[in-house]
Length: 136
Image 1: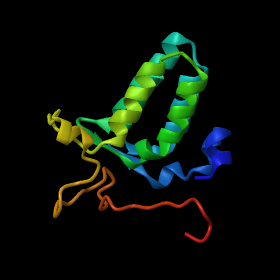
Image 2: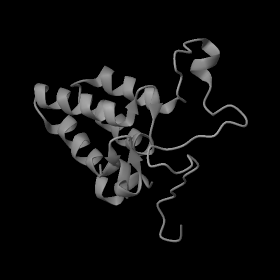
Image 3: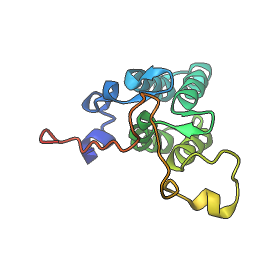
């Protein structure tokens, strides 16, 4: 993802529909991000709760959450509304599913345990990669 895409909040430059959360296609994520950024306190909070449930559901994270992180950071920095909650979501999406492991080792673990298999909500192996370039 280029700096121009991230800094310009160019959600349209990300192929959201190619990545799924446990409720379906990630194509709803850009609207939620924009509602968080531009909505009043109530609408913004509701959109944040919905986004959290979509990308960080029941201890697991999904690919659209990883793609949303650069936008979440920029929204948190530019807009004081819900800043702490936005950064908490960034942290939750950035770490592997913890399923109750709140130890220092568990919090610092960034990858899956050796030999474990990870399946995305779409049913595909969790080894996706998107570089954002046409040749990929």
